[in-house]
Image 1 (tube, helix red, strand yellow):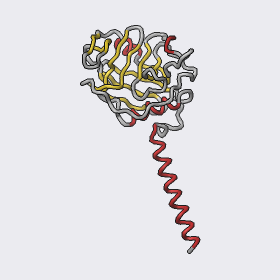
Image 2: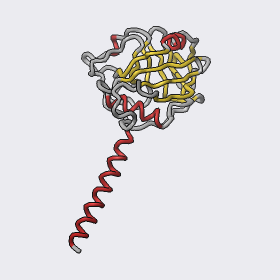
Image 3: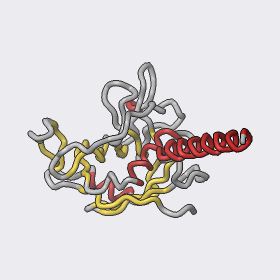
Image 4: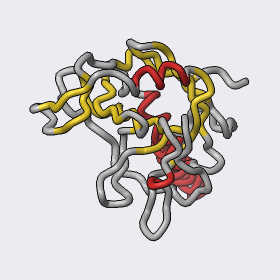
Length: 202
């Protein structure tokens, strides 16, 4: 009888541990877990962009991004900030300029050795260094000012491998001041993210 009780307790703890592990893995790390360089296709109203993510150097950031992709949370969001010769930023608002819900903020991996060079993808954030959650941007220039120095920089987590011309075209659209966002550099004609998918490993 005693052995049966011990076995039942062991089996129960094993089940709890497995459930806890499964819950923990819902952070994006479960998506192509053995692939250090997953590729993601971003389909927009201006064309498609494929990015190769660097999970080896930016594991927290890549897994976070893949988590939003997995939840289809970037679909029907917009690129709401376009600064020519600087950045194309999006992923945070829908077409009505309503902010999308987000997972908790992540640790800033800006010191990973990746720099904000032309055609890289990086995380947007507030002034607080560890405040990134879902918004990202494409660098449309070599933006050394966004790299870490005396202060925390902006974490780069991949690069564009297809669709550089699409991002260049995005960076040149006409923008205006938006009363809804209380911000400049908002495209007059919305650039919408229609679909984001993780591509099969190469």
